Image: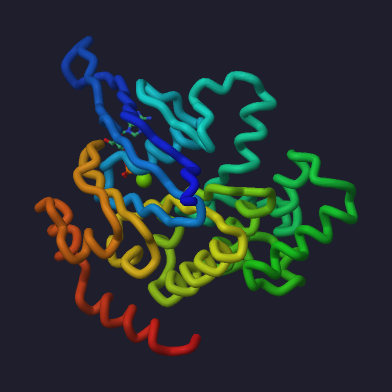
Length: 275
Ligand SMILES: Nc1ncnc2c1ncn2[C@@H]1O[C@H](COP(=O)(O)OP(=O)(O)O)[C@@H](O)[C@H]1O
Ligand SMILES: [Mg+2]
């Protein structure tokens, strides 16, 4: 049975901002009537140009941003109705986020050990020894050497920092990971390795991913389904192969056309060699 982990129904987010006209207010429909679902163990890619509402969508699912209307069900429970601190904390154990910029999302004054240990401490995972064991297991899962644990973020490359972000996101019994442009600050070759890692972890732990990107090429071989967003609206959704082979909307065709051929060739080359 395909279990639905996340179900988003008719979700909206309006921001009211001051307009340049004196005293006038303007409403921005950042997310407008969006519905989709994510199945356990699958990757749903959210694709769209800058300003299409992708990050706003992620923030609402993480309960960082209030919704204007609609509903968000996680394992059948309406999370926008969660009020109790404990309920929100339990939810946070299961849904984690990996941010776009690995430099600003890791605390520069903490060691890698402390950074990965933090969610374990917050959720009272266990005593000191149990936490150390778990952190060591996690750093190995993301294929970094153990001695990195004593280092500080500024001594790591972008790709290595993003691996630490991923280790932190899977520290607890996460079911859904929201990745907001996790590789857009990285070189193409590093991007490919991070995607490989994500795929391996997904299989091992039956993780579901909501993978946000402006780069449709990146998700071609990775995502199961795609939703295409434009100016807050969901313009098209479907299985990844259908979106690529038979895009129904002009906007999607434009996104596919904008994939540079060189990048595609480079990707094929990278896929064909052992790194
Ligand atoms: N806090 C905010 N206040 C007002 N407008 C916002 C806020 N956050 C985002 N927006 C607007 O909402 C729209 C969608 O933004 P965002 O979700 O960041 O898009 P994306 O992640 O796809 O680039 C944009 O027009 C943006 O300017
Ligand atoms: Mg964004």
